[in-house]
Amino acid sequence: MKTLLVFIALLCIAFYFWLKYNSKWEELLTTQDVEKYMSIVGKLQGAGIKYKTTSGGEEFNSRKSTLNSRIAPISYTIWVLKDEIYKSHKVVN
Image (cartoon, rainbow, N blue to C red; front, side, top):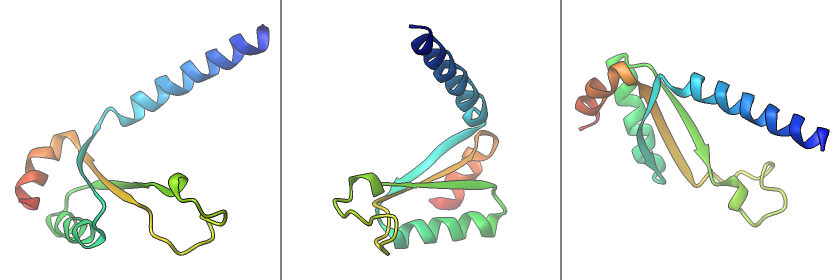
């Protein structure tokens, strides 16, 4: 029982820090098209907008050696600072 309570407490603390860290970022776009992803990242770099990216989908790949394979992730997400979200929408569109 004590182990479960400690585990739940650690999860709550981790969730709090995750929320605090991600509170200044807003999702700009999620795409599965690599060319569109690279195009938008290039536009953001050209405009000097700070961004970060995440990719996902590897966990749904049915191959056993997904991490060692050269298969691209299924989806790409681009995050920008909340202060620059309006500017980034203007640059992308």
